[in-house]
Image 1 (cartoon, rainbow, N blue to C red):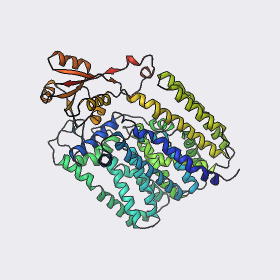
Image 2 (cartoon, helix red, strand yellow):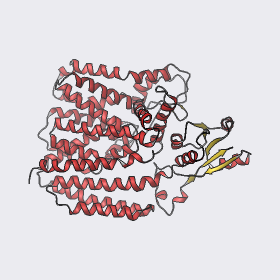
Image 3 (cartoon, helix red, strand yellow):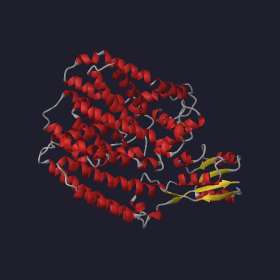
Image 4 (spheres, helix red, strand yellow):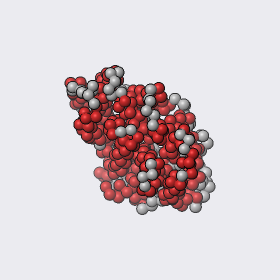
Length: 549
């Protein structure tokens, strides 16, 4: 079998371009509720009120996530205006930077071929692409972690003080994105590597201590903001009580409190959650990842100890996630650069082995399975332009199956990208546009902009994050008739509420017109009756937008 590197070098830029292009359509789609629209609204509040210290969400002082992602979105709003694209674009840029650092890390720990394969894998891993559409903290966090690890490799190899500063800066940005717990993911693998190789002198090496000290210096904007918003104002009610310390929450409750389930935000989970989550979240490379892990454990004879900087972090973080009581699928995305490198190394090592053709055949079968599933879902849901979607899916399947491949690795990568193309074209061009029409708050906001954007807006006992973000200005959240009455003194105004409450207000003598009755369904919790075109109407609720004269 001919060497894979010259062949890979020829098609690498084309596949990478396709992979990046498949991530782009999601940038122009609307922001999905609840978390994405909430975070976008928090950043909107920063810009509109020119307040870069106090985070405000759900109608009150907001203490959950640190500031960094909101600052990035707010800066983007200042440049591009307050819109969906501006919210998602900085996260997309960070994702691109993450691909670059994935390449550098794989290149320096393995070789250029493994680096190229790693980037191709990472570019279209399912939940990574979904994170670029439904933007939360993960695109920022993932890049900051892998960047810090690569610069730490430069610190370890004594390549210069610039790596110390860069590693500290990226570590600080990661901390200001998710909290202090991320230091375990960044440094855990290094600590295990030093222990396994008896490099005890590394624990007193001044470079690491300088980096750690700089990291805490770089997070002072976050610490000051938390102190100014909460510690200086113990009278504020947070999590239903007063005297809440923002600094204590940042250093303990938000991370260790969630892990031990003792903090104000609690969850439930089981030890196998991230095992089965990874199998679908890392599509179309899940089988390759499992094979890569088995290969590392049983057959890898070239075990360069420094590679434990990523192996150890992967293992440690995965165990911590699995033991935590607070588990969400998107958490696993921060390990995708590591997963990509592990999978790429396996494919590289086996690239000249005849048995790799078995995995190539499995990938080929998966393309057909994904295509059949997409086509079945198209007709089950009754999406518009189903014939166009079906035609594009069949075309992709046909093209990838008539190509003459020069080796098994090329076949695996091409079929993986065919799967990705089928999935993302379906999701971004057909499925998500269909779902997003059931974000009633967005529909109401369109009506407000078309009618008159000047009057104030309130939500009465029916709340929508998309309304908060897309409506002009702030949306007043009212829970009682007294609060609503005080708000309606500002006539004219808009009220977003349920049809029943809208009717009761009009019957009570409020001089108002019903401008819109948008459909509502919580699209992040899909149910088969909603997806089924024959039973969908039984699952859809309505909301009303009143214009009070």
